[in-house]
Amino acid sequence: MSGPQFFHLQNFSRKANPAGQSVEQVLAEAARVPRFSTHVPSPRSPRVVAGLHPARIKERHDAMVEAGRITVTLADGSTKERGIRKDRHTLLTCVASHPLLSSHVEADAEARRKYETWVEYNLAHFQRMFGDKLMGVVEHLDEEHPHLHAFVLPTDDPTCSARDLNPAWAAKAEAEVAAREAGQDSKAAVKLGNAAYKARARELQDEYHREVGIAAALTRLGPKRERLSRAEWRARKAAAEQDALLLREMEDRVSALAIHEEELSATEEEITSRLAEQLEQAALLDAEAAAKRQSASTESDALLEAARRDREAAVARLATAEAEAKRLENRARKKVEEDTAVADAYPRDTKRKARQLRLDAERKMEEVHSQADAYRRDGVREAFELARKLMIGVLTGEVVSAPTGEGWTIHDERLKRRVGELDVASSLNRILQIVSRCWELIKRHLKPAAAEAELSDLVEDQPPAGRDQLHQSERGIEP
Image 1 (tube, helix red, strand yellow):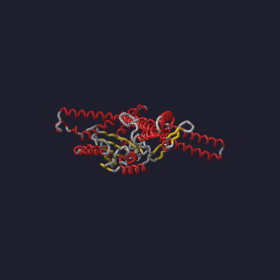
Image 2: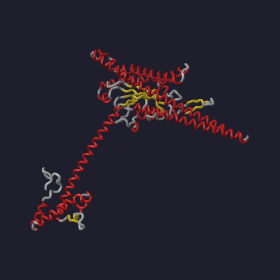
Image 3: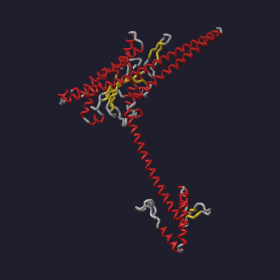
């Protein structure tokens, strides 16, 4: 096997957590709805192993929440029923991952048989844990390792608390209640509760290992039945123990993050509940103030002033409560985001991305240098060609000294336009003067016919069009 098995429980609410996970998102991802499955390179429809499809589970969940009610006690001692808040955890999920690669399971018949045995043991384990609250189990084979998603709903709980379905969370709650009843302060009670959570989470992993891992793994056969040597069996056993140790460490980290997230979620729920109570109390105070104002119409101005002060005090208390709740909510959200960022950081992936970015930058730099070299070569080549044409133009009379004595008049419009675009006239001015002067001196010593023949020879010696002017021969530019 390529790694240890993995088993993890997590609760979700309709309100998205800092990582963007919610009941809708989790169930849609399980169903491989495209906009929730962008992390999967080639998404495939899941196989429903047991129970309902995720879309039907979403319908069952929404109906359960719509019918749910929570009874709260107000500050004045009265009680009131409320609907289920969006931040209440109403869905429990369980993820079980197989150590073999999905490609191996699909390609190898023996691996597939062992995997299907593992699936059957998982179904039995889920049913023992959750009974009729288990709504469905789906299988994903489109990621690196095959894995199962189980979905559980608190269908018999009017308050729709999925958190209570998590045995580790139940152990934490019981430990905190016992600690407070024993006289412990809140900080000590929470510490004991966290310890109970981690201990129960380890027990759940051990139970899973016994009921699923050992039952389905090859290590349960022993060296004789599988015909392994003693050394091979010891190596197999040591690898299994190492996998168990890694799994324990992984679960400890996951448990710590889960505890922190649950505590922040509980704090947010407590803040929301307290704010709702304060809002209701403020509404009662406002109603009382209004009643006082109405009755004060027949009383003295002093009673009216007292009612006004009561209302202002109620509004001030409401504003203070809202500001405090907002501050606590922001602090809790920031803490969750920081912890989630730390948990999701993968140095190896960061190094890989940095290395890829460096390679891309080097490749682009090479392309830029290559293109710059090509531009320079083309520029030099064209400059030489323009110089040659201008010098021939001086000989043929197509390029003559300007009437003002400064610069040159070029009769060939295309040549004139290109010289202007490259701005080489001033650079070639001295060369053209020398060529013009030399030609004048030569013509003085030649008869007109000889000068005409020499000029014809010079013009005919031009290289053919399209030929690389910088590489006329192995010796360089032809004279």
